[in-house]
Length: 533
Image (cartoon, rainbow, N blue to C red; front, side):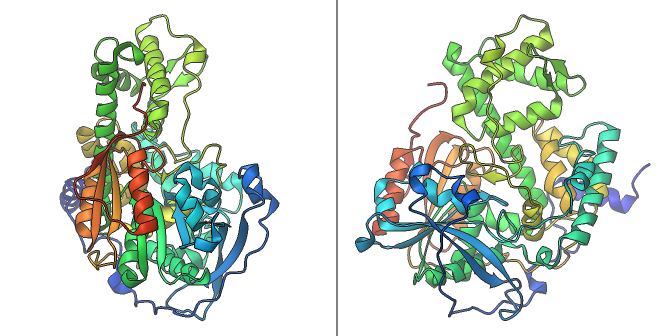
């Protein structure tokens, strides 16, 4: 059935990224500002639970301690109901010369960061481990911190999610996905409870300020990956004077993300396309080191993608390669350059199956690692073998922070437009936040949407990879420009986030965090290892 003229006009505008402020999710102007709490309770550290300790390296289990830190459910009512934010502390090796605490956030939104303090050596040089207590925490609504849940049973969740497609193409897939998404948001309204109204990044930033006080620090030291860059930027602008050293790696565009969710996700899809094209060009340039290099990798990929759009293929190991599955796997593997060799072998196997050519051995293609990042939808700095803890915080945060036109029926038109611009990732991006947030039950969230230019005492250190798929390099440039006091460090690298994988950046970050030494403008570093090395 044809859309009415007004709706057709609106659909065209949304597809082109126009801001329709009158139809977007209510912004922070509708909410009263929360009062600043300046006398928070000290954190009480105790032994971590056995199930928490089981998730960290054995060598760290005797070092860490945990706390359940109470924060207001609604920061506008500081004496009202509270929830507990779970924290883990890994103490500084040199307590006599300790600078303070360093809070960590792995991204998401929805990334459970509790155990990250036990993995500090994966990201930081020894001097940081000596001089800071590392503090990991699950933000509100995530993991062990009052997890936001939209279902009461796994069976209820399976019934709804089982009707969704991550890349809906056919009319049936589109209809079923739209119907299931509406059922999902209705279940959130029914089940999630009062926390649903208080899932903004502003809420988390205010929690973080209380935790800073709780550990006894006068100013915040913070490292945030991906979505954690929005948290760092939000804190720096709500509490600029309380910010000592903030490092943000894999950056969002804060102004765009909090003012036009559709355009942000449209550009996010373009970032994945940039990273994919760079992967295919690198594959071509390295020759036989990349199993997908024979012929024209770009043309081969486009051909197999277009084939899978209408017909799946069976691989030598008996598994089926589907359109949605392959797009999800490619998007996930673009986060991690270490997986590129196996990804190339996987793509060559699909190419062979599509063209009836004898394939590579099964052993060469079955061990392609997938990141626990919702197939590229959630930006999380993933730890090896991190178990997945299910909650609904991803949409709880995004549908609070990012304004969208509240017309779910626009999805088919927007998906078609984005797919023309971003042939591999446009449709899947449209099927995520844009569709879900259009019917999200929170209408006037208490969220921060700026200003972003308040000046911190020391510059914020902004780090960006040239070929970051999830947060394209232009976002890092914009972040540095929007912040009131920032310095951009660039890396000629693939993958999502870079700390721990570039000695040059790691040295700069260490000198900044420990000595507050700000790097010179315009520096470009290299990763420790190049893809296909």
